[in-house]
Image (cartoon, rainbow, N blue to C red):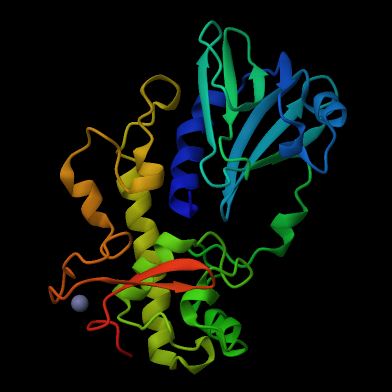
Length: 283
Ligand SMILES: [Zn+2]
């Protein structure tokens, strides 16, 4: 599932491609992704509008549109869900079977494909107001992070997935940040010391920044040859081996820990897999 770095890389990739393009038509093939916006409402808001900007908040994409005559601004909120993809393709290229929404940009289509039906593309942006700070922004500080963790008895791994504590972290980068901070994923959030919280704060920022840097060098050519492995497996097919190595514990059960060579373990927390090294992450 795409997390902050993957969404950021996608935003950086799409921003220059969409900028200035005008929506000449829109086909909604699965209305559910628009909810609570109705297809009619969606069409009316976006038809004829121009892509003016694209930003990211947590794991959400925010497409800023400008209506040409009135100058009125409209924002579309996008979420990739489990395996959603967004890409541009030539107008004559066949649409993928799971294309949920297709924007006709004149000569090319901007396609939102959602094979597993967990994504969204809607005019309802209310969820953004409930998100915690951006982990790479100035609002995310050790002191605010500590305040958010103090109130919770949940295991720190589970708490890191709470988008109100910090926005954009999912299962992959929660495991990776805890490994780099040498903290047990089972440790209760409220029992972390100030020093441990500072270490985790630094590790969160580091793993996310590294992943964005790595992803920015991977070719994203979604429609044509499916070079999007980076999004789900840490590595796109055909990219050098070292891309996989950026994930040190995630999905590496039984393989040697890069620090101590003991096997990486997997356990289930809140119905999701956690990967960790019991030897290195014992505090
Ligand atoms: Zn280890």
